[in-house]
Length: 323
Ligand code: RIB
Ligand code: CA
Image (cartoon, rainbow, N blue to C red; front, side, top):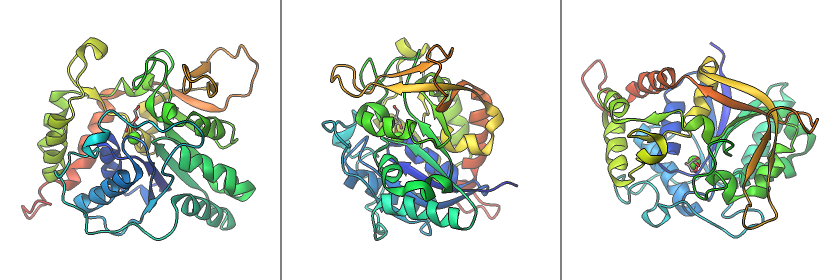
């Protein structure tokens, strides 16, 4: 079994929570740390929510680091659930865990440089505004680049247009300059735009299957989806909401579920009326070297079968106990 040493950069958030739980339940992934960044909600909330998820999963062994509290340059924007704390208010208890000492960016840089020194690499799983990752690219230098095998990103939108605003997907919209830095970093990138994540709708039937096997985790997911209604039948054509972030670790677990094409991706940074807009040169019109492998097709049933299978780790044990 190929194992991947990963860092998750995150702004929990419902789908971030599911992604972290999926990673915890997958022995192929060795988590070197969880790095919180401002995004869906302010940094204090994303860090607290990351700690809550670690406690929900019983994984107090993985350090959570606090990262950047705001975007590189643009004014700060949050997700639409910012005033609720982003993870259901007091649905999960105040964490007893505390964040690790040190800044998330320093942790990301050190982990990559240490890997490079051993002739190894890490993979960065980024499903939040890319502020931490961009700062690591800017500060880390050649040793950092050598130590990062790939950055797998949930972000951007092409045919799917935007979500937080009509012209942009939230993670890129919240920090377009950071996205531009990462796209220019020369580190291999796999990009999950909304075009891909909209193919992964968490329908009521799929939620029922997850709920049936995943104990307290499934219960929390069900309760959160009652608080945060992610349905948009007019947009998605059926009930359910996109499960964006878990596709990022899923790519490492079952890459065959996803079809990608190499392409050059750009991001608008200057105009406030279009900042965060991403565009993709799918047909090589600009003659530029591709900077991303863009996910175009998702085997949705295979993806949810993987998520359900792995989240069953949180269900009743053989001895009938539940977590
Ligand atoms: O646009 C979807 C992205 O924005 C997801 O990562 C979600 O968690 C929010 O951060
Ligand atoms: Ca996220």
